[in-house]
Image (cartoon, rainbow, N blue to C red; front, side, top):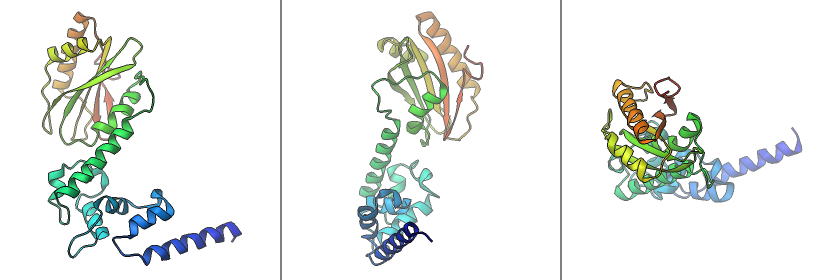
Amino acid sequence: MSEINLKETEYISKAARGVRNMLPDEQPREKLMKYGSDVLTDSELLAILLRSGTKGMNVMETSRHLLETNKGLHRLVRCDWQEISRIKGIGKVKAITLMAAFELARRLNQDSGKEKVMLHQPDQVYGYFGPMMRDLTKEIFIVAYLNSAKVLLGYDRISVGGTNATIVDPPEVLRRSVMNHAHGIILLHNHPSGNTTPSRSDINLTQRLVEGGRMMGIQVLDHIIVAGFEHTSLRDKGIIT
Protein backbone atom coordinates (compact mmCIF):
# COMPACT_ATOMS: atom_id res chain seq x y z
CA MET A 1 0.00 0.00 0.00
CA SER A 2 1.34 3.44 -0.93
CA GLU A 3 2.15 6.13 1.62
CA ILE A 4 -0.77 8.24 0.28
CA ASN A 5 -3.23 5.38 0.68
CA LEU A 6 -1.97 4.71 4.20
CA LYS A 7 -2.54 8.35 5.13
CA GLU A 8 -6.03 8.29 3.61
CA THR A 9 -6.86 5.09 5.51
CA GLU A 10 -5.61 6.57 8.78
CA TYR A 11 -7.61 9.77 8.15
CA ILE A 12 -10.85 7.88 7.48
CA SER A 13 -10.30 5.57 10.45
CA LYS A 14 -9.61 8.50 12.75
CA ALA A 15 -12.71 10.28 11.46
CA ALA A 16 -14.88 7.23 12.06
CA ARG A 17 -13.54 6.77 15.61
CA GLY A 18 -14.12 10.45 16.33
CA VAL A 19 -17.72 10.37 15.14
CA ARG A 20 -18.49 7.17 17.07
CA ASN A 21 -17.33 8.84 20.29
CA MET A 22 -19.66 11.82 19.84
CA LEU A 23 -23.10 12.09 21.40
CA PRO A 24 -25.89 11.15 18.91
CA ASP A 25 -27.24 14.72 18.75
CA GLU A 26 -23.75 16.13 18.07
CA GLN A 27 -22.52 13.68 15.45
CA PRO A 28 -23.82 15.29 12.23
CA ARG A 29 -22.85 18.86 13.14
CA GLU A 30 -19.38 17.91 14.33
CA LYS A 31 -18.84 15.69 11.30
CA LEU A 32 -19.79 18.51 8.93
CA MET A 33 -17.44 20.99 10.63
CA LYS A 34 -14.51 18.58 10.60
CA TYR A 35 -14.92 16.82 7.26
CA GLY A 36 -17.33 18.87 5.11
CA SER A 37 -20.99 18.55 4.20
CA ASP A 38 -20.39 16.24 1.22
CA VAL A 39 -19.48 13.27 3.46
CA LEU A 40 -22.79 13.37 5.35
CA THR A 41 -25.63 10.98 4.55
CA ASP A 42 -29.18 12.14 3.84
CA SER A 43 -30.23 11.25 7.39
CA GLU A 44 -27.29 13.18 8.86
CA LEU A 45 -28.13 16.30 6.84
CA LEU A 46 -31.76 16.04 7.91
CA ALA A 47 -30.63 15.64 11.52
CA ILE A 48 -28.86 19.01 11.34
CA LEU A 49 -32.08 20.66 10.18
CA LEU A 50 -34.13 18.90 12.87
CA ARG A 51 -31.56 19.95 15.51
CA SER A 52 -32.86 17.64 18.25
CA GLY A 53 -34.62 14.38 18.82
CA THR A 54 -37.52 13.54 21.09
CA LYS A 55 -38.07 11.46 24.19
CA GLY A 56 -37.09 7.93 23.28
CA MET A 57 -35.42 8.86 19.97
CA ASN A 58 -32.27 10.89 19.41
CA VAL A 59 -32.02 13.17 16.40
CA MET A 60 -30.33 10.57 14.20
CA GLU A 61 -33.03 8.00 14.93
CA THR A 62 -35.67 10.63 14.24
CA SER A 63 -34.18 11.57 10.86
CA ARG A 64 -33.79 7.91 9.83
CA HIS A 65 -37.40 7.27 10.85
CA LEU A 66 -38.46 10.25 8.74
CA LEU A 67 -36.73 8.85 5.65
CA GLU A 68 -37.95 5.30 6.22
CA THR A 69 -41.55 6.45 6.67
CA ASN A 70 -41.42 8.28 3.31
CA LYS A 71 -39.27 5.66 1.55
CA GLY A 72 -36.51 8.13 0.76
CA LEU A 73 -35.71 11.77 0.22
CA HIS A 74 -37.47 12.28 -3.13
CA ARG A 75 -40.81 11.19 -1.72
CA LEU A 76 -40.26 13.25 1.43
CA VAL A 77 -39.85 16.51 -0.51
CA ARG A 78 -43.27 15.94 -2.10
CA CYS A 79 -45.03 16.03 1.28
CA ASP A 80 -46.60 19.18 2.67
CA TRP A 81 -45.73 20.37 6.16
CA GLN A 82 -48.93 18.95 7.65
CA GLU A 83 -48.03 15.43 6.48
CA ILE A 84 -44.48 15.74 7.79
CA SER A 85 -45.61 17.13 11.16
CA ARG A 86 -47.73 14.02 11.81
CA ILE A 87 -44.68 11.73 11.71
CA LYS A 88 -43.42 10.63 15.13
CA GLY A 89 -40.77 13.01 16.43
CA ILE A 90 -41.63 15.80 13.95
CA GLY A 91 -43.75 18.71 15.06
CA LYS A 92 -44.97 21.84 13.33
CA VAL A 93 -41.73 23.83 13.70
CA LYS A 94 -39.49 21.04 12.39
CA ALA A 95 -41.85 20.33 9.51
CA ILE A 96 -41.87 23.98 8.42
CA THR A 97 -38.08 24.14 8.72
CA LEU A 98 -37.76 21.16 6.36
CA MET A 99 -40.25 22.66 3.89
CA ALA A 100 -38.27 25.91 3.80
CA ALA A 101 -35.01 24.02 3.17
CA PHE A 102 -36.58 21.97 0.37
CA GLU A 103 -37.96 25.12 -1.31
CA LEU A 104 -34.56 26.86 -1.13
CA ALA A 105 -32.99 23.80 -2.79
CA ARG A 106 -35.56 23.95 -5.60
CA ARG A 107 -34.95 27.66 -6.18
CA LEU A 108 -31.19 27.25 -6.15
CA ASN A 109 -31.46 24.38 -8.62
CA GLN A 110 -33.63 26.53 -10.86
CA ASP A 111 -31.37 29.60 -10.72
CA SER A 112 -29.06 29.53 -13.74
CA GLY A 113 -26.79 32.23 -12.33
CA LYS A 114 -27.07 34.11 -15.62
CA GLU A 115 -28.74 37.41 -16.39
CA LYS A 116 -30.42 35.95 -19.47
CA VAL A 117 -32.13 32.55 -19.62
CA MET A 118 -32.32 31.20 -23.18
CA LEU A 119 -35.01 28.58 -23.85
CA HIS A 120 -34.48 27.15 -27.32
CA GLN A 121 -34.90 23.42 -26.64
CA PRO A 122 -37.22 21.28 -24.46
CA ASP A 123 -34.26 20.12 -22.37
CA GLN A 124 -33.43 23.74 -21.56
CA VAL A 125 -37.03 24.39 -20.53
CA TYR A 126 -37.06 21.31 -18.30
CA GLY A 127 -33.66 22.23 -16.88
CA TYR A 128 -35.05 25.56 -15.70
CA PHE A 129 -38.57 24.64 -14.60
CA GLY A 130 -38.17 20.93 -13.79
CA PRO A 131 -36.76 21.40 -10.26
CA MET A 132 -39.77 23.56 -9.39
CA MET A 133 -42.38 21.13 -10.76
CA ARG A 134 -41.15 17.54 -10.64
CA ASP A 135 -41.86 16.79 -6.96
CA LEU A 136 -45.30 18.43 -6.71
CA THR A 137 -48.31 16.32 -5.77
CA LYS A 138 -50.83 18.65 -7.45
CA GLU A 139 -50.99 19.74 -11.07
CA ILE A 140 -49.92 23.31 -11.80
CA PHE A 141 -49.94 25.19 -15.09
CA ILE A 142 -47.18 27.66 -15.90
CA VAL A 143 -46.80 30.05 -18.83
CA ALA A 144 -43.29 31.27 -19.66
CA TYR A 145 -43.00 34.54 -21.62
CA LEU A 146 -40.21 34.91 -24.19
CA ASN A 147 -39.01 37.69 -26.46
CA SER A 148 -38.18 37.25 -30.15
CA ALA A 149 -34.71 35.88 -29.26
CA LYS A 150 -36.33 33.26 -26.97
CA VAL A 151 -34.96 34.92 -23.86
CA LEU A 152 -37.14 34.35 -20.81
CA LEU A 153 -38.94 37.54 -19.78
CA GLY A 154 -40.76 35.97 -16.85
CA TYR A 155 -43.42 33.42 -16.04
CA ASP A 156 -46.73 33.03 -14.22
CA ARG A 157 -48.28 30.14 -12.35
CA ILE A 158 -51.71 30.33 -13.95
CA SER A 159 -53.54 27.70 -11.93
CA VAL A 160 -53.20 24.93 -9.36
CA GLY A 161 -55.44 21.89 -9.55
CA GLY A 162 -55.77 18.45 -8.04
CA THR A 163 -53.74 15.31 -8.56
CA ASN A 164 -55.16 14.69 -12.04
CA ALA A 165 -56.09 18.01 -13.61
CA THR A 166 -55.97 21.78 -13.47
CA ILE A 167 -58.34 24.33 -15.02
CA VAL A 168 -56.82 26.83 -17.45
CA ASP A 169 -58.62 29.79 -19.03
CA PRO A 170 -57.07 30.45 -22.50
CA PRO A 171 -58.16 34.14 -22.67
CA GLU A 172 -56.45 34.76 -19.33
CA VAL A 173 -53.25 33.09 -20.58
CA LEU A 174 -53.24 35.32 -23.68
CA ARG A 175 -54.12 38.45 -21.69
CA ARG A 176 -51.13 37.91 -19.42
CA SER A 177 -48.92 37.20 -22.43
CA VAL A 178 -49.83 40.58 -23.93
CA MET A 179 -49.24 42.32 -20.59
CA ASN A 180 -45.76 40.76 -20.42
CA HIS A 181 -44.95 41.86 -24.00
CA ALA A 182 -44.33 38.26 -25.03
CA HIS A 183 -43.39 37.44 -28.59
CA GLY A 184 -43.80 33.75 -27.81
CA ILE A 185 -44.90 31.58 -24.90
CA ILE A 186 -44.07 28.12 -23.59
CA LEU A 187 -46.76 26.23 -21.72
CA LEU A 188 -45.84 23.83 -18.93
CA HIS A 189 -47.74 21.59 -16.57
CA ASN A 190 -46.90 18.57 -14.47
CA HIS A 191 -48.34 15.08 -14.17
CA PRO A 192 -47.94 13.91 -10.54
CA SER A 193 -48.80 10.38 -11.72
CA GLY A 194 -45.38 10.17 -13.42
CA ASN A 195 -46.92 9.55 -16.87
CA THR A 196 -45.64 11.99 -19.50
CA THR A 197 -48.28 11.05 -22.11
CA PRO A 198 -50.43 14.09 -23.04
CA SER A 199 -54.15 13.62 -22.39
CA ARG A 200 -56.85 14.58 -24.87
CA SER A 201 -57.61 17.66 -22.74
CA ASP A 202 -53.89 18.62 -22.81
CA ILE A 203 -53.94 18.46 -26.60
CA ASN A 204 -57.23 20.35 -26.92
CA LEU A 205 -56.04 23.14 -24.62
CA THR A 206 -52.77 23.43 -26.54
CA GLN A 207 -54.56 23.71 -29.87
CA ARG A 208 -56.93 26.38 -28.51
CA LEU A 209 -53.99 28.42 -27.27
CA VAL A 210 -52.11 28.00 -30.54
CA GLU A 211 -55.11 29.31 -32.49
CA GLY A 212 -55.79 32.13 -30.06
CA GLY A 213 -52.13 33.12 -29.99
CA ARG A 214 -51.97 33.16 -33.77
CA MET A 215 -54.80 35.69 -33.94
CA MET A 216 -53.00 37.91 -31.41
CA GLY A 217 -49.53 37.57 -32.91
CA ILE A 218 -48.20 35.44 -30.04
CA GLN A 219 -46.58 32.14 -30.92
CA VAL A 220 -47.02 29.08 -28.72
CA LEU A 221 -43.51 27.67 -28.98
CA ASP A 222 -44.04 24.47 -27.01
CA HIS A 223 -46.02 22.73 -24.30
CA ILE A 224 -43.88 20.72 -21.90
CA ILE A 225 -45.32 18.05 -19.62
CA VAL A 226 -43.18 17.39 -16.55
CA ALA A 227 -43.50 14.02 -14.81
CA GLY A 228 -40.82 13.54 -12.17
CA PHE A 229 -37.45 13.37 -13.88
CA GLU A 230 -39.01 12.86 -17.31
CA HIS A 231 -40.63 15.33 -19.68
CA THR A 232 -42.46 15.40 -23.00
CA SER A 233 -42.55 18.13 -25.64
CA LEU A 234 -45.80 18.47 -27.59
CA ARG A 235 -43.86 20.20 -30.36
CA ASP A 236 -41.57 17.18 -30.67
CA LYS A 237 -44.69 15.01 -30.89
CA GLY A 238 -45.99 17.11 -33.81
CA ILE A 239 -48.98 18.46 -31.89
CA ILE A 240 -47.61 22.00 -32.23
CA THR A 241 -46.37 22.85 -35.72
